[in-house]
Length: 273
Image 1 (cartoon, rainbow, N blue to C red):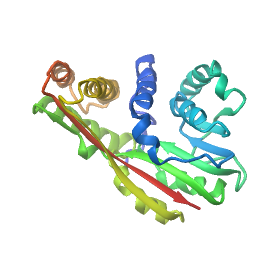
Image 2 (tube, one colour):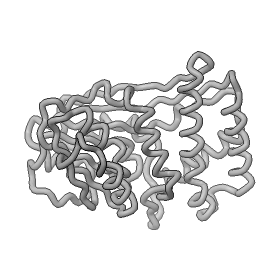
Image 3 (spheres, rainbow, N blue to C red):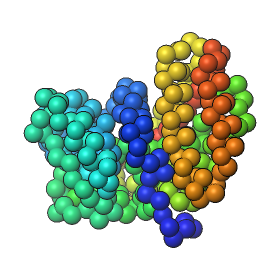
Image 4 (cartoon, rainbow, N blue to C red):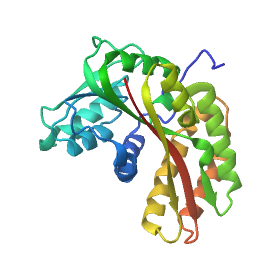
């Protein structure tokens, strides 16, 4: 049971976090979009667009696409509009709207495709989001989802201070801000919400000394991801300032270790209406 005071986004909305979202989208583009195909779609709904990082990729990869992207936070939508404004390839093919994904204001069967990436982990009722998604999709439409499975995270050398922080990070997210393990549940959620032809895939990032550039980028992104939640975790007394400092020190050591290993798996799903 989640506490009554629900925190919408545990990572915050400062410029460092917003840049992390763009960096993460660029870093993960190849692995996320291998099975995403909107080449025959005209009107696609992106739920939880954030700063528009995935919006830019969708518009670039699918030049015939018209994209409607929604988010609940003005801070994110403002950055998204600026991020896409100078992109000539996507001009006039998108709109950003402020909207609650659990209560979409679109009529039934408004879109022929939907895209959600790193979104359901941050909402209180993912089943409501998916029920609204299927409502606004035309029959036979495709939905693509990418979600976390935080139990797969691994670092070497062994870093107990990072693990202490990571466990409390997941506890906090589960209690206040969503579900850090929702990727493994996508099959059940999609089935319960009436989707058909459901497929799920496990995608892994495994970087060691053979892939130093990718490993460095992953560690940089992950360091920002973890520490972005520190202010809220401190506020709600899930962690101490000393534990934050120790985690940060070990993350810095890992980024300077030529033998470091980074591993993380996430889950992708696609389904039709």
